[in-house]
Amino acid sequence: MSVRAAARTLNYDPAYLSRVLSGKQRPSAQLIAGLDELLQVDRESSAPDASVSLIRVANGEEYAHAIRETSRRLVILDNDLGRVSKVAPSARRAGPAASGACDRKAEGRPRSGPTRTIPTTQRARVPGVAGQAGLSKRALGGLPIADAATRAFRTVYRRLGSGNYDRKYERDIQSAAAELAEVAGWTLYDAEKHDAARRLNQEALFLAQLSGDRSIELLILQNMAMHSGWLGRHREELAIARSVIEGSRLSPRVEAIFRVREAKGLAGAGDHTGAARSFDHARSLLGDGVHDGDPSWSWWISANEIDGHHGSALQEACQFGDGIQFLQRALWQTSGARWVGYRSISAARLLDCLLSVNAWRDAEELACSIVASVDDIGSARTVTLLRTAIRRAQMADKTPSGVRDVLEHLGSAMASDPFTL
Figure 1: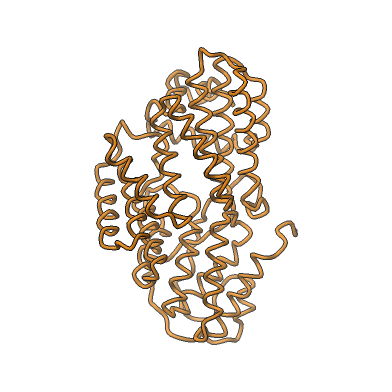
Figure 2 (figure 1 turned 120 degrees about the vertical axis):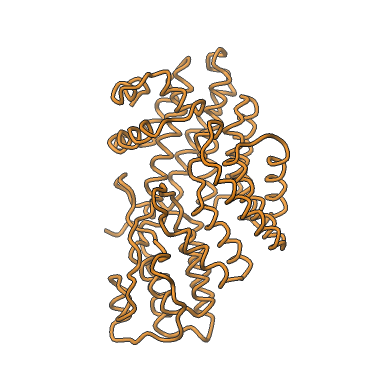
């Protein structure tokens, strides 16, 4: 759907909608609601391959729009397939864990071992059905979205190199290309294709700086810092975060994002006191609310998001008991908050924490919930974390046999043929 068609459908001025979609103006709450409803209808026509054809033939000012449309469709598909359901594990303690195959595994077997009580109001919400794109992201294995994004960017990259575009729109095209490279870099990172992700992030940063688009540059730097932390390059993550914080004036919301990256870098480097201060600083910055200067992409930062990163820092430091409360809050839907994909990462980390503190009943319940939705896990990073948690628990002598059975079933489910109907 074109910008003009969307504007006509929503009864908005096309110029205003174009400024919003390009990140130059913040949308109203009414426009956000209208776009959400419109995109819900338009998702079936959002296949990336259809967009790639646009960037091969578009010219003039339509070329930048075609590139951004490709990025939009890729993001819609990635978000839909990474969506988290709102189905929480049962609050009941009696009887075997409920979740299909887990029922059969646990049937007739009493609960064993101690348990850590989790307040009903903080029950973890775990991954559920995929979004409405009609595809299982696990069947995609996380990679084809990254592959489609990379192929699309390669098409743009070659055209930029050849100069086969209208120089009048060069900066806008470079900015749009930076956005597409950012999408490709993110999806490659989540697919654990790290060398390729680093290359795409660097190319995205180069194009953002060429175009003068500071908004997308900040998002790319955030992604690069996160990627460095995942690879264990914590000092690099810290250096990127502080270079942004100290280098320019940021809105409170954007600063909160980089304070989280600062906290993760400090935690990875062993400064847990400093990390806690940075996490608290990030939370306090969110209290300032939304500002006109906030980039359009910054909507996802929330208290839940910060809690997830705080919990992951504690889990990585083997402070499992301390991490549980933060990971629970990260998985619990705050009233009025929008759902963000990749919460399965926090579910995997929470499972590892529960197993490590011998909270067998809670761990078994969470594992069963993950089994029930394992076909919808497309993030390779989530799979890596789950396999690590399973392996660690299976190697421990203290793990009860009932929990071992459920973890074995979870491992088998993840290893099964994703194309089986």
